[in-house]
Image (tube, rainbow over all chains, first blue to last red; front, side, top):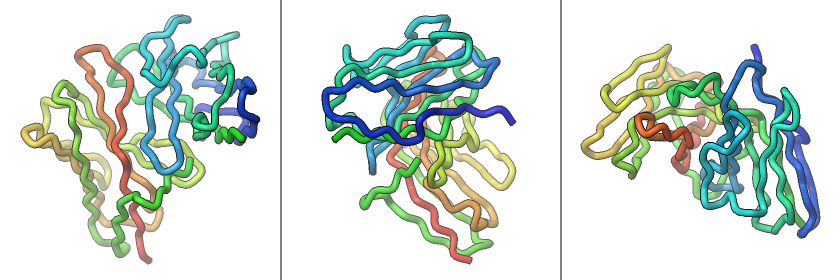
Length: 115
Length: 114
């Protein structure tokens, strides 16, 4: 069964450093998402991406964040200058089409620890 | 994918019993609701969904009930098995507005005792 994959599984970085979290969505999917989950809290939406541009973004997704689809398979989330409060699990998801009812398939997540 | 928190509500049931997990939502404009299961070390996994023009939907061993009047959603799991042990989240979105961003609830941990 096709699945969303994410690398690395765990990333440790120092405050102020840039990090890039990588995702490979399911191959025929068109809509891509990033969510995050701070330990003990809800899963929170960050951004959605379709047709090579951002479709929706939350207040969390400020100028420190950016997304990119650098090639036909990868989808990345960049945090330019990490803060302690960016420590969280980051989940990538993808869905097949533009239909909002399409299931969002989640990857296993990347745990980001900012020290 | 650990979503454990000291304050996460926990439902403990015996294997074979039925489980009911509840969720309250706040956005009246939400018209599409989904239940996700999250096992330790994994991302959320889709279980079942329901549109706001329905009040009940059944899947295999799972039923979702929607009460729009009180903005309440529940997930019923029949004959709960040890493999059902996980954290369960409800999520909502506004399908008819074209919004796809999911708003998740705070989660309930289900523990199934063998």
